[in-house]
Amino acid sequence: MRQWNFCAGPAAISEEVLQDLKSELLEYKNSGTSVMEMSHRSEIYSKIAHEAKSDLIQILNIPDNYEVLFLQGGATYQFSMIPMNFKHLTGAADYVTTGTWTKKAFAEGSKIISINEIYSSEDSNFTCAPDIEKLDISENASYVHYCPNETIQGNAIHNVPNIKKPLIADMSSVILSEPIDISKFSLIYAGAQKNIGPAGLTIVIIDKEFMRLDDDSLPNILRYSQHSKSNSMLNTPPTFAWYMAGKVFKWIKNSGGLDYFSELNHKKASKLYKYIDDSLFYSNPININNRSIMNVTFVLADSDLDPLFLEESNANGLLSLKGHRSIGGMRASIYNAMPLEGVEELIKFMKYFELKYG
Ligand SMILES: *Cc1c(COP(=O)(O)O)cnc(C)c1O
Image (cartoon, rainbow, N blue to C red; front, side, top):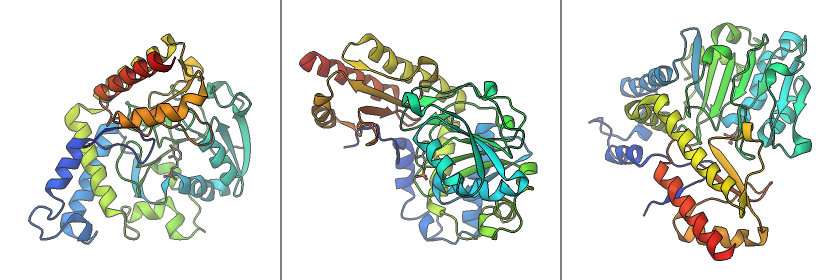
């Protein structure tokens, strides 16, 4: 039986989408094969690929002067691909470090480009995040990199900064959770396995003018413009993940788009935070204005009870609540595919557990 899955990634996919997949898993629309077994260059697959792209453009309201790429390698690959493509501009970039992922992006990027870390909240265990507009952005920065939602710590930067330098964002765990103004960014990237679909696919949304600046001395496979030129089919793309992403985009559209999910996601998160705040047994360490609506982290007053909490929650059909191994505690990832009911069940369990052991 399917249960409430709070995994941070690969994360829950809507049952509606999975049922739809099931119905065409063996044979896709009288083609004689499953989607996994067909040429990515075939007419029937091209249609799947194209439709997924245009649905994403519609859902996110992506302006015409942006390209949408379907790549591989995960968000981690982008930590290197971005500096490789743009270091030749000035040789320098600014990075904002607010958690594990931006710290990794900084470490990997530093091997390629000279990085000025203009902010780090590591001293406060990444419990806060800055207003990027108030930071000192370097004169020679080719771009500014940040992460609006740090998946592991559960912190967020909610307003998109208005800055003069090209803005790059790792949106792996927050993309499609609410509407965003794409025009403020030069490049957005996101691994698929949080809020888009199965692992293996990475979405890049890039300003075409910025894309034209990519380094032409790089091998084609590393250049955004070359992926664009071949419609993200420079080589065999992750066809199954792309097809599944398309199904998720349709599901989002049919559910009412990002306005619908934004309302739902805020409702789920505020319900859970409210319960945590009202309780003396659970607490959330993140600065209130920087709380994530996608990854809600919390600790128990007595961490000796952690194993018991995990064992009992699991037995009650609430899966994967263990916080990341690097920070401990608990984490409930409540992406689009988690219904309000799942969060209510979690709160019910947390109440029961507090009553029993608190
Ligand atoms: C999951 C995650 C990553 C890493 O993604 P991979 O696809 O495993 O490379 C990077 N950044 C953020 C914000 C993430 O949530």
